[in-house]
Image (tube, rainbow, N blue to C red):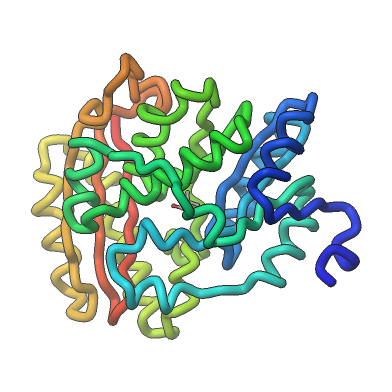
Length: 286
Ligand code: PAF
C-alpha cells in the first residue's frame, strides 16, 4: 500500500535485497540513519545529505539495542506513515525499513570501548554499544560514501567517526543542532512534553547560551558552577550531569576529532530530566 503512495521513493525491508541494491548503485551515496518520528532536525540532516552525494538513503528503525531503559523504548514515539511521507518530500531516494527480527538476528556486536563508557555512556550503560552495533550493520549493508549525524548527540557522532568510519571509508558529516524558537534542541522525545515542560526544557540551552556569552566577557569563570547556579532556579529541571571535557578524549585510531569540529576543542555536555523525559544538549567551545 505504501509503495503505491510513494511513487518516487524506493522502500526496502529485506537485508539481502538492500545489500544487492546498494552494491549495484553506481552513484555517490549519502546516508541519514533515523529512528523515525521525524522533525526539523532530521530534515536538516536530509537537506545536508543532498548536498554531498547524488543518491540519498535513509533508514527507519527504532533500535532496541540502544535502549538501556525498557520504558523509554516502549514510550518512544512512532509515526511511520508520516515519516515515509517526509522522506519522500525531502528527496530521499531509498529508505531501508528493516524487519526487526531479520536485522537483529546474528548481528555482529560492536563494543564501544572506554570512550563509550564515559560521560553519557556512564549514565546509559550499553547505549553506545547498541548504537555502534546498528550503525555498523547499516554501514556494512549500505557502504555509504557520506553519513550525516547531528552534533546534539555529540558522543555518538565522535564514536561513529573514530570507530566505524575508518572501517568503511565513509566520510562523517557533523550537522548543527536544530532548535525550536525557544532554543530547545529538537528531539523526537520533545513530542512527549507538555507546554509547561517544554518551557522548562528550553532552560537547558538558555543556560548554555548564557555561559557562552559569559565566557566571551570573562573566560576565567567556572563553567560548571555557572550552569549549576543558573539551573537551580528551575525546580522541575532535574539535572543529571554537567560535564566539561576536552574533545580530544575521543581521539582514537589516529582520527583527530578536532578535524571534525574545526576550531572547537572543548565541549560542555548537559543531561536533564523534565518529568520522565530525559533530554541532552551541548555547547562546543574554543
Ligand atoms: O541518533 C539516532 O537517531 C540513533 O542513535 C541512530 C544513529 C539512528 C542509530 O539508531
